[in-house]
Image 1 (cartoon, rainbow, N blue to C red):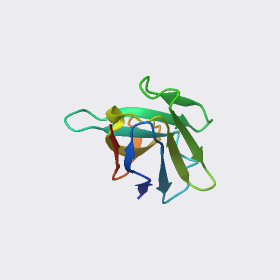
Image 2 (spheres, rainbow, N blue to C red):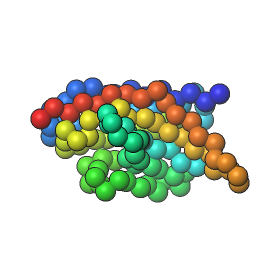
Image 3 (cartoon, helix red, strand yellow):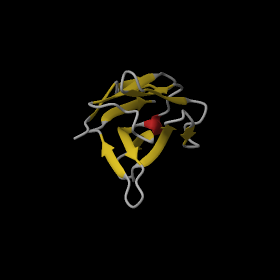
Image 4 (cartoon, rainbow, N blue to C red):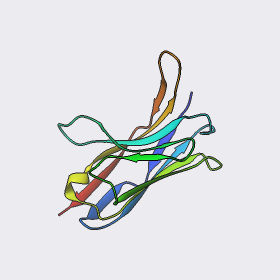
Length: 119
């Protein structure tokens, strides 16, 4: 069973930075996509950023130019550098790994790490 463990969350003032890391218990090379999602109180979980095996990335419009996602296959980690943080970035951030299958994709989730941005 694949385990994903997030770290790096915390409390930061608006305009500050945080770096989230997600460590996998197995090689991440086989995952077609690794991503970060977030869920704020009373809201649905949303995609923040994703990185494919070939290194191409996608970002939510709300975080473009502020957040950077990267994956290190050798270290089995995926990171999210968050700059210019805003109070609306406050949420629990979840690491996600996906193996694309012909019928149903295989998905794995971490337990989440809290990010709180004070105004």
